[in-house]
Image (cartoon, rainbow, N blue to C red; front, side, top):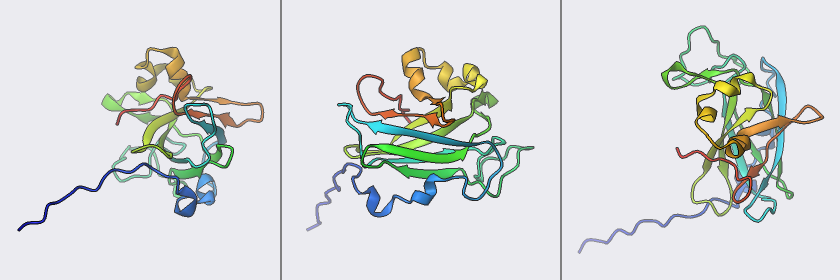
Length: 191
């Protein structure tokens, strides 16, 4: 008699990040002295009730200052790879739902049909209660190329588009909060 196969049920993500995934040094993507403008992104993560999420994990993937990814499929001629910048980082939230990442401002990269995309950081977001990670982007408020970015231009509702924009604060750091549900919910991408 053949055994009946029962699929493993899905489980929610977290809250186990502090046990093995939180590597504080990965929140400093400038630790190897890469080329480019150094920036800090700080913010908080809020759930649907407006409460801070103390156990979220944010993974970042971005191009270097020249607009090239440190990846084998990025073969852009004329844009060099920075051996001191790999474009990957990770930050966990603290008990108050706060995070901070040090990185460089990425250069613009080509998108579909070689349409130039504004400088941005790709984000995979993990938190308790999620069955899979969420994906979004962080753009920069002082970037003129935002006006012609294909993804931003495809979002008709200004209030939704605004949730993808990090704003530079008084101390020079960019501010970007993740809101998981409700008013000012961050725009997450369906990929």
